[in-house]
Amino acid sequence: MSEELSSRAISISKDYSDRRGYDSNFLDVTVPLPQLSVSSQQNSDLKTVVLAYHHFSLLMNRQRKLAYYTAVNIDGRTLRRLKRESDKWTFDPRIDKADQMGPEIYVDNTLDLGHLVRRIDPAWGESELIAKTANDDTFHFTNCSPQHKNLNENKKTWAGLEDYILNNALANQLKVSVFSGPVFEANDFVYRDVQIPKRYWKVVAMIKTDGQLSATAYLLDQSQLLADLGARGFTFGEYRMFQVSVATIETLTNLDFGELNQHDPLAGRRSLDMFEITSLDMIQV
Image (cartoon, rainbow, N blue to C red; front, side):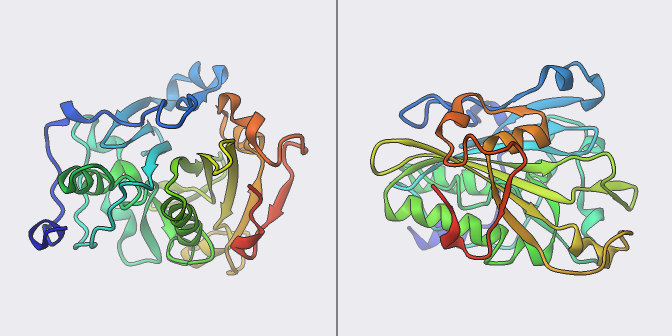
């Protein structure tokens, strides 16, 4: 990569007409965006809207001011590890600022602006410029969610799981599609007049080296960490990470992941079975 490009600051184009978003045909089989359940679609209070970016899309829940989910394509063959410049977050002009959680929630506390689509995941392509524009697109407030720093930055949980996915894609020259989001619950902790999700999830779809589709799902819990923000009912403790079935994520989120259930190593388990992961080598694929 040229020094000029690699050192260029975050710059987001205001012309959104060329954002093609998540590609459901990116893998050798079609993996469409998850669909909201019929009951959720009928709930007009959700105020959802799909927004497309470079190599990823998200469904925005404007009532909660956060993404309901994100969906990103990762190409391990043309991925480019771009240097991280100073963060520069921006509102997406396609929806009202009032419908996006802005910087005020993250000031003077232990909350991080947690990327749902990590900046380097969509940073791939035949040209450096394509990778850079996708990298920069992840710095929209629509793509971040309040995560305790001990969850977001920890190499054994959120960051560690992201590294595990990315390193496998790189090492095996794989294409991967990753879905991420918060679990929205009615009793989520209220902080500065907004609700902070207690749990986050990921669903990872890839074609393995044997040519078979694999779909794995994960649940990360920051409940205990929120105690230092004044969340009642918790004492400060550690994060927890679980491998769960895709069906479990569907139950928790009211999302339908279509046929991915059929390619889940935990398929057939009880819908809310959870297997705590204390080391990434415990992951079943």
